[in-house]
Structure formats: structure tokens, C-alpha cells
Image 1 (cartoon, one colour):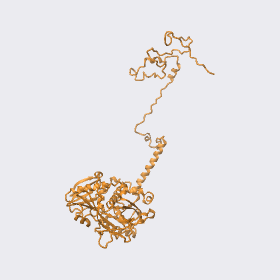
Image 2 (cartoon, rainbow, N blue to C red):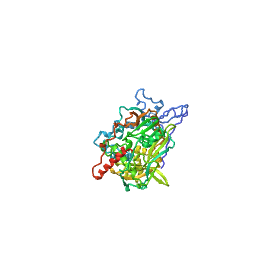
Image 3 (cartoon, rainbow, N blue to C red):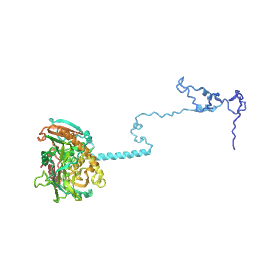
Image 4 (cartoon, rainbow, N blue to C red):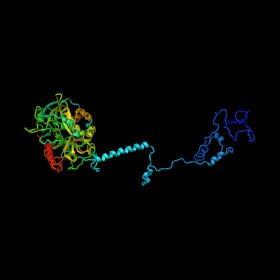
Length: 575
């Protein structure tokens, strides 16, 4: 059933627009409600609204009272039905209306609510976003795992960080020394210099062939590291080399050095430990030397790591004990990986440091000359340890060994990672021994070696520093490996060229370059002519304070004698 809609009677106004002026009485048969106003208008005005149901009645009086509020417009007064009895429901609504305060309750700033109740930890606020909460838990687990590994690698949680460690100077600075200059490493990184291809002057010594079976060694098929106490190893400095003396007398060059000294200068920016190089200016010639018992004869271990090593002198994992152990390992490794069947490659001249009938290690000395400028040529003694024949062509090799002393310090166990994650092991070594690996690469480049062999040697037991095993041997091409470790040859020669130019401006005499033990810079001191001949320079450790092996059995006792013998030959052997 459809209900009709009655519009109602509309009065007619014959005088114009709008309703007639006569007021409609209640008795009038009209269905329109009483007192319904119409907005006044004229023909010049635009048509506005008929009724405003959004008007705020309190707008005029709620703005501070008096004249401060905005008064209602005159046109809005016709829409005020508050006094009209025709709408009783509006009054009822107004009487029952209550304003609700929508403001949030006041909260104390910067203080979480749960801190006021320290005994009820379960009342911490909960996150509503479950995905964010899950990510937070995963990040917390990862952080806990890193912290657990960090504390596991530290032998003592109370030790200071490596940045705060205090290192000693490699040489005791005497009060009568005169400091001439100090060069920050930041200037070294900006240097660049290109040298032409060098020429070989003299080739001395003899080489044994490399045993390729060592390339197939794995941690599951490890080999015991042998001792070669009957072979002599020579670490002669520049001025003690008879071949360099002969070349200097013949005016073949103006600057003389060894590959070890040049590599130390070339990789100076990567060094952390202190080192020193003696510079002698004689006439128009320059000689770069090392002191007897210098740190350059040893191999640093864990030098660029962030984790500190024990500082106790009697600890087998102290910096000095590890450097002696690393030199001992390198000497034996370089001889074990060779064919010792008497088949040797001999060169023009014999070993210049060996006596007749003396058994010497497999080594060849290549005296090479580089032209730095029109007036300056540099001659360096470079070493290679082995040779191999490939397609009837001989290739020279350098042999070096990385040593693992305790997996807790590096966080990587070689016996577990070498077969499956060899790259991770090498990356860890590049982080912890950046300077040593860079120096080995620089020496291989100086000697023009075709291949550099890196051995991975580990202790049989972390507390036994005399017995070792070979876990793997890997070969690299020096130039490829240099680019892999970001070693720039132009920057290397730029450092050497700048130091040579600086020393050439000095007067005749003796000087010493010292790497600051705590700052990345090199200092140049002028020292007396007999500075390092009076034996007042501080040695790293006296012989009676060197680390002794544990007296557990006869084998360790024998190892003690062998190690001391090798150590003495390494540090003090001369031709």
C-alpha cells in the first residue's frame, strides 16, 4: 500500500515574491508549521540557504565572552528556533545534552609508565605489530650470537680493547738523537710513482724444486712440519752483503737496500707495530740497513687484529713469542715443501754468505736495479725460495706460511673451514695480518716471482707451540693477489721515491726511520755514527727471558733445543 505525500496548501502572493504579508492563523486550513521563517532577500542578492542545520549556537559566547568573540551574523537570527514552542523536542535534547571531554589524559614526559612499577616486569607495553616484534626478536638473537662469539674470542673479558693497547718502540730513543722530521701516513696514501722495468744485475745461490704433492694436502690429510736444524738461514743486512759492496764500489747505483726493507717501507701504512730502519748517507750513496736483532727479522702475527694479545712475556701467545714462532715455521716450511734429492738449479755465483762445505737453505738472491730518475738508481737484493718447471720453462716461487696459534683469537677454526670455506679463512687472515701479507706480496713482486705459495700451518694443540702440522698449501700469482688485497704498486714506489728524495737532501751521516708505536707516522732521527755499535739499544727480549717450552716429556725437551738453535740462526746468523 502506497502512502501519499501531501505537500500542503501554498498561499498565493499577488503583490510579489515570497509569502503574503498576512499572518496565517492557527485556524487557517494550512498544513505548514507555525513560525517557520524564511530568509529575507532582495532581487539584488544571490539565493542563499533555506535552513542551516550545522550552525553552532555557542559560537558567539564561547570565545572568551564580552566583545572578544565573533558576533552572530544578522542573517543567522532568522534560523534561531530556540525560543520557538513549535519544536519542544529540541528543548528536551538540549536539557539532556552533556559535553564529553575527548582530550587524552595527561602523561608524564620522557618517563615510561612501566618504570614506576619495578616489581611487575610482565606489565611492559606490548607491541601491536607482530611483524615488527618478530623482526626485533631476530635482531636480538643475531646480536646475542655476535656478542657470544665476541666474548668467546677474548681470553680475558677485562682486557682493554686493541685501540687502547700501548706498544713499545722497536728501538729506544736516546736523548742525544735529533728528530729532523715526522711524516704522517696520510701523506703516504696520496703518493704515486711509476718505475720502468728493472734489470737483473747478478743471480746468486741455488734452488731446489718444489714438490707439487703438497698442493694436495687437506686438513684430513695433514702433514707434520719437520725441523731443519742443519740448514743455515741468512738474514744479512745491506752493508754486510759483499755483492752490494762490490756494486757500490763500481758505482752501479746510488741507493741500496734489501727486499725486506723495501717491503717494510712500501707497506708502512698498513703497519701497527713499531719498526726502525737505519739510513746511512755515504758520499752520494744511500744505504738502507737494519739493526742486528731487529724486528724486521721476525714475522708479526695478529698485528692488524682488533683483539689484543697477552702482554705477559712468558705467555706463548704474546706478540714477541708468536713472531719468533712464525719465523721458525716459515724457515722449516720453505724447506719441507721441496725435493731434497740433491737436484739443484745453480746460478752464476754461489751463496755469498755461505762458507765452503756448509749446508745452506734453498734460496736464490736476485740483485735487481730500478731507475728512479736520471740521477738515482736503486739496487735491491731480492729472494726466491724455489723453482718449478712448467712446460719446460722454469718459474720462480716464494714460499711463506700463515700460522694458526689459537682459533679463539681469530674465531675461525682452520681444520673445519679450510676445505669448505677457504675464502673466509683468507679473508680473516687479511684482516688480522694485513701488513704481513702485503709485505710478502711486495717481496714477490720485487723478486719478479711467478708464483707465491702460502701454507696454512697450525699447532698440533693450541698450548703446544713447538709441534705443528701443514693443513693446506695454496698458490697465487703475485700481481693478481696484489690487486685482491688492494696493494697498489704505484703507491708502493711513490713511498720509496719520497723517502729516497728526502734522505738524499740530508747531510752525510747516520739516520734512523722509526715508526711511531702509537701513531700512524714515521719519524726521522739523526743519530751518532756509532749509535748501534755500542750495544745500548734496547733488545725486544733478553735470551734468559725468552719463552721456554713446557717440560712434559723428552720430545718437548728436544724441541726446546731445536727451537733455540733455529731462533739463534734466524736472529744472529751472518756470513
